[in-house]
Length: 87
Image (cartoon, rainbow, N blue to C red; front, side, top):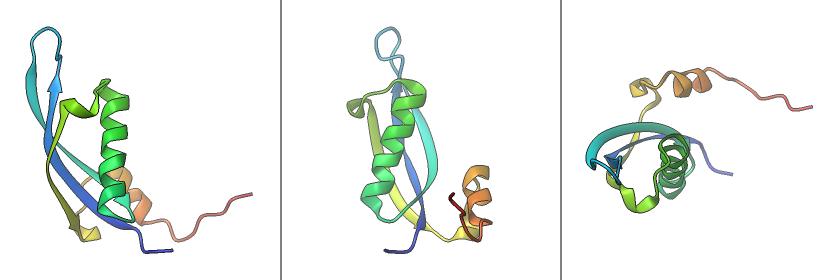
């Protein structure tokens, strides 16, 4: 099993595609093993939160960032976890 890394995904999403379509910029930070998994996670998050299809999401850049540069509170909180106990 590989090491979990933090990726910053930057792009645009089409909001309100049926009435007044507008492109809005987004930046998401996710934890993943590979760039492909990070991209799938972003598609899943944006599709779930904003009811977007993949064709309404344009990814411009995916970059691996060091843990110190993470700004997302959820990602920073997960960095502090030392071990996970499952019953």
